[in-house]
Image (tube, rainbow, N blue to C red; front, side, top):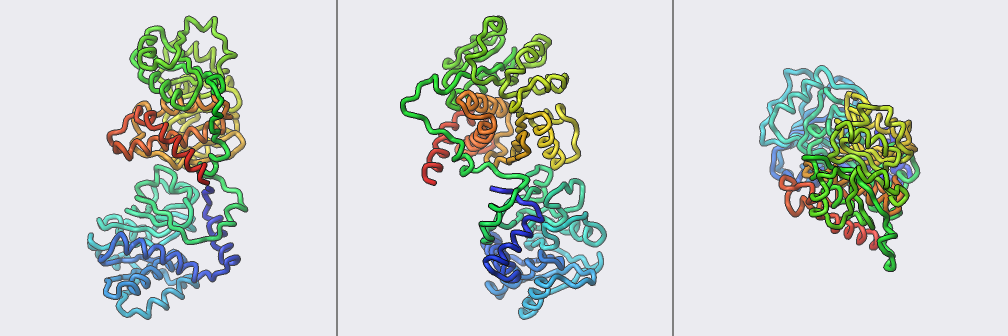
Length: 500
C-alpha cells in the first residue's frame, strides 16, 4: 500500500476525473457524502459549526453542511467562511450557491478577529479551512481563528487534514488545528505517520471515496506500508518433511548482571519465531538463569568463544541488556562484523565509537528507538528530518535501519522505505525491543533475506502486540505478552495469505 504525497493525491483525483469519468464537483459530492455519513453516525443531534476556507477543502465543508440539512432539515447548522476578498475555487462557488437554497442554513463571514464566533462546547466543530495543499504556515486572522477553535473546548472534526499541517513536511511548532477526529480520503498521508502530529490529528479515519485503483499502481511512492499482500511474497510455509536443521541456528549476545531478563526475552522470542536451534552468548553468571528460564536454548559464555565454530551460526543478534563495560565493548568489537541484528546497548557502544559502523556487513539490521538513533546519527529538528536521515544513512552505509515507533520505519539500502501499520501503545514497555531482536535474528537464521526478515519481523511483532492488547488491554501489556501471542500472529498471517 503506497503512501502518497500531496501532489500525487491531487493527480489521483484528476486521474479519476478523467478515467471514471466523473466531474470534479461530483467527486467532491462523493467525498462529502462519506464525511456526512460519518458525522451523523458519530455525532447525531448536535449543533454543527462548519468553518470553511475558500478552496476545495472549504467546498467539502459547504457540501457537508448541505447534506446534513438534506438528511436532517431541523439540524442547527452554522457555516463560517473565512473571507479575504478573493473569489473561491469553482467547486467552492458551486457548493455555496447550492447551500443558499437551504434558508435554514446560517452563513456568516469572518473578516476580522472581532468576528470570531462564540463556540459552545456542545457544538461539533467541522474544520474545512485548508486541505492537503497548504504550503505555508498560518498567520494573522487565520492563525487567530485556529487558536480560537482550539481553545473552545468543543470536539473538532477535520476534513482531509487538520488545518495548518503540511502533508509532506513538518509543521512542528506552527499553529494548527487540534482535531478530535481527522477524516481523510482514500489513503494515508505522510503527516499522519509521525508522532509530532498526533496531538493535531487525533483519531484518524480513512474514508474510501472510490478513487481509481489503477493510478497508485502506475507511480512510484516515497513510502509504502508493510501489508499482508506484500508479505505473501515473503512468507514461507513449512515443508511437512522439514527438520530442525532446515530452520537455522541463531546466536544472540544478550544479558549482563542485573539485565538477564533482556536475554530471556530475546531468547524466547527467537525460539517462537521458528528458529531450529538457538545458542545464547551471555555472561557466566547468567548461565543458570537462561538454562532454567529457556530450556530450549543452549548457552555459550565469552570464555568459550575461542573455540566457537562461527560457521554453524546462520545469524547473530547483538545488544539486549549487554551493558557497556570494557570487556563487553571488546567483545562487541571482536564479533560485530558477523552481526545480523544490532540493538540496544550494542547501538550505544557503536555511537560512542562510530568507527565501528565500518565493521557492519551490508544488510545488517539496526533497530534503534529515537534516542538511540540520535546518539548514532545526530540530532534532527523533527520527525520528518529523522525519517529522511534514516533513509540517507541506510543508503550511505548499506544497512537496514528500523526506526522504532508507533509506525516503525524500515529503511533499505536501495532507498525504499516502509512504515509498519501493526502495533499499539501498549508495546511501549521495557523489553519490547528485545523481543523484536529475537524475532529478527530467528527469521534471518531460517533463511529469510535481511530485507524480508525486517518486513516480516516488524509486522509480526506489531501484530502479536495487537492480539495481546485485545486480550489484556494496552495498559496491562508486558513484553512477554508479545512473545506469547506470536503463534496467533503467525496463524493470522497464514490464514489471510491462504485465503487471498
